Structures are given as structure tokens and as C-alpha cells.
Length: 186
Image (cartoon, rainbow, N blue to C red; front, side, top):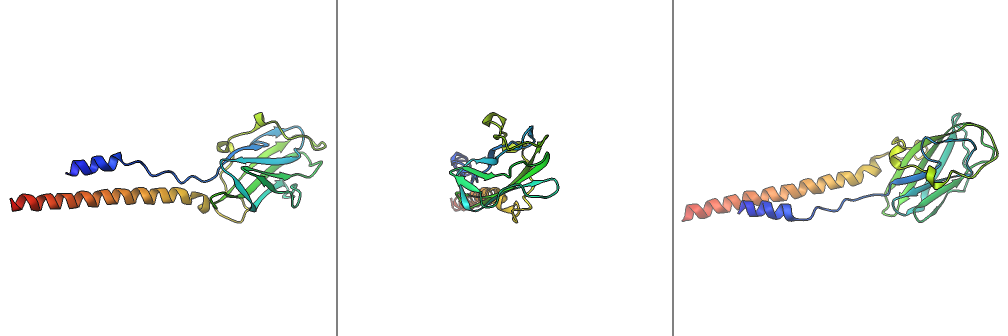
């Protein structure tokens, strides 16, 4: 009986992962070195994102913002912000906060480098994009949130998994007790 319960528990499908949107690629990409300042920053996510509650902040090494006010926009799973023209050479940090379609907040940041000052040039092609794995994992200081929101899905999966194991163990104990009582009564 106990073997049957364990086999049945193992045959049950695993609970689906509670995935949240994640950054799939960016233009410019994390770590890129550009010869001209881009006109915009574009972020592509694994699911649709909402404009409300979102922001992309781009700062120069001295802390000066180069993103243009009120230009943050979303279109399905893409978020963009326009940048100031003639941004100087240097390191830039992109910090973002988006609200995914399932309501979870996603924050992160990454950097890119501009090697010389020039008029705004088109952003690199899609071939120059990167996966989120290359992006930094620090939470965005400009976002005002912490990474706990993005990690809540993993916590839920662990709780559900441990709860399922607990149910199987309780069922196994009950089966052993019932079987023991039947054998004593015979």
C-alpha cells in the first residue's frame, strides 16, 4: 500500500513554475562599448509589461540623468526610453522597473560604455543585444523596490513542493497505521 502511494505521488505532474517576466535582451546590451551615444534604450521581456508603474532611468557616471523625461513607453513585451542627444563619452547605468502582466515587479540594472561624444546615433542592431544573464543582478536604486518581489515566485514553488511532500508523507503514515490495525485484527 505504501509503495502504491509513493508511486502515485511520483506519477503526479509537477506543479507548473510560477514564472515572472525577465529581461531577455537589451539595446544597448549590458557591457556594450559604443562609438556613439544611442538615441534610446530598448528592453525586451519574456512577457508583456505594463507602462503604469514602470520606469527606465539612464545615468552617466557623475549621476546626471540622460533619459528624457516622460518618454518611457511600453508595447507588449518591449519597454523603451528616449535619451538626450549629444551625451558625452563615458559609462552609463541603465536601471529599470517594470510591472509584468502578472503584476509582479521586475527591477535590475546594467551598464554600457560610450567611447566618444557624437550626435545621437541609431542604437546597435538586434545582433548586439544580450541575454539577461549578462546583465547585473543588483536591484535598481532608482526603482525604490527590492528584489524580494522578483523572488516571490521561487518561494511559492518551494512552499508548494514542500506541502506536496508533506501530504504524501501523512498519507503514507496513515496507510501504515491502517495496515497495522488490519493485521492485528486478523
